[in-house]
Image (tube, rainbow, N blue to C red):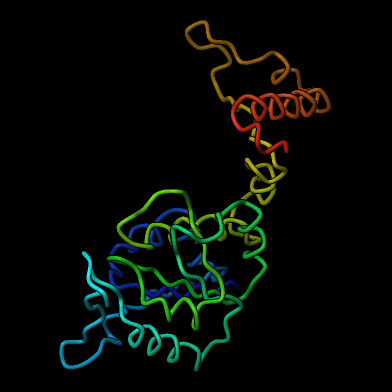
Length: 225
């Protein structure tokens, strides 16, 4: 079983992504464990402060090192993490290959930043890996963490009802997935390609491979190197 521990100052943002659909079913089956930890419970002082003004001035608040260290220290009393990941716009790109790699781990901790980010000493001393889901900035790392959990979780054996489904997803072989069709075979004079109705497995596989290569050339040529 793969376990995720997610540290956030806005835990309710993650209620929806983890309590419905595939990830919810995986949690019910005991294939995946997702624990969300409220950083404010580890805040400093009677007001449980977690953020403060940046040294040197400037707009925006910065999450303090002490609450994060307190939270991580508590979690690490019970778990040894394969990675402690910080969701950051300047981290390494999150790709299908990274998802495949992380799906083989046992314990992952994800720290969600907010405001102007976290005290740099967190990144220097407490984090083992930084990951970005794209070249844009979100209000916090929660949505990025949800994306990662979904992409990684669906690779765990037993999570999908048909385990071969994940193996034919886009990017698994550096190609975009081919087009797919379902009933009816002809709708509004828009027919399904004849080869898919032929029942000839080898020809269908060849057609799908050709379509994947062609789509990748047209839409994501960089994947072909």
